[in-house]
Image 1 (cartoon, rainbow, N blue to C red):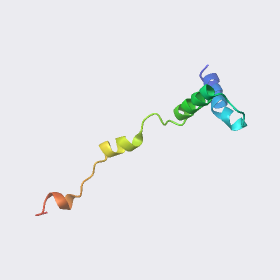
Image 2: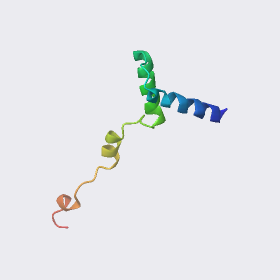
Image 3: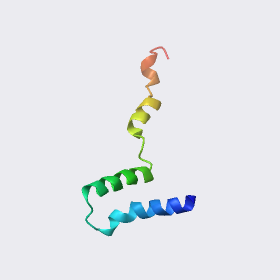
Amino acid sequence: MLWSMVNVMQLIVKMPLLNITFPQNAATFYTFINQISSFNLIPTDKLDSLIFNFTDPDMEDPNF
């Protein structure tokens, strides 16, 4: 059952590559599914700045 869902997801993601004109609601659906399948659900730009907030150690302590 899981492999069937993976196969269907592959078919859905590859549909826009057939160069067929789709209605706008289908194009929006394919864009949404493509973001899910490429794991772009979480914006990593904001997470990187929150997690990796490095400062220059030379600027914190002048006696160091």
